[in-house]
Amino acid sequence: MGMNIYRVDSYDAMSEMAAGIICRQMKEKPDSVLGLATGSTPVGMYRRIVELYGNGEVDFSKAVTFNLDEYRGLGREDEQSYYRFMHEKLFSHINIKEENTHIPDGTAEDGDEQCRRYEEQIRRAGGIDLQVLGIGHNGHIGFNEPADYYPVRTHCVDLSESTIEANRRFFTDINEVPKQAYTTGIGTIMRAKRILLLACGEDKADILARALTGEVTPRVPASILQFHPDVTVVADAGAAKYLCI
Ligand code: F6R
Image 1 (tube, helix red, strand yellow):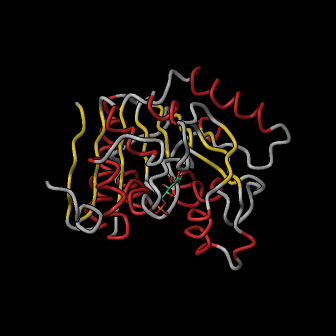
Image 2: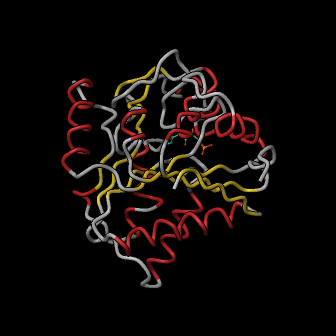
């Protein structure tokens, strides 16, 4: 309980450990509600989960998932949508039921209504058992960007310049990078029973140290995890560079 920080040698070791944590969760509670993240960090974890599934080591038939976020304006079939990402990296390779997977709809006509419904769906599912997170260079979790306050619930957010810049690697032109996204809130994330924060690469070292050992402030949204009762951090050597562990 509290915060457990694991420093592992490589990206593969981080992915292996993270996949193991997910699979143990599924064994202990087959109808677990998983909160899932996209981005580069968890790709290896998803790959490993698919392997473990292939070996018959994990069953997702009763799993329920809620993704953290989706770009506003991107449809499901858009190459860069998180819907597509999740299906390509995980959902289409395991036995999860499509109706048990949830990702905000980037094309929802009534964004506010969708955000309310998303929170309600999470609540009805019994809350998130295990929330997987990556961390942005500015300390964001989900797309909760640095701000003067913590956004509590699922909402539509204006992405910061640094996030747009970080995401441009996936698009041919910076103008194609969506400027807004739907994201679960800091309250939604903090209500998860357990949190698994993954970080890899030296470019995350500074922000990871600030988030885990610095002042708790909405200017570094991930810093609030210091107040969560059950956080596991798995960082590779690069990301853990400034952590004294
Ligand atoms: C993704 C998400 C983001 C990412 C973060 C790090 O669903 O919510 O907070 O986890 O931007 O992204 P990567 O892993 O690409 O460095």
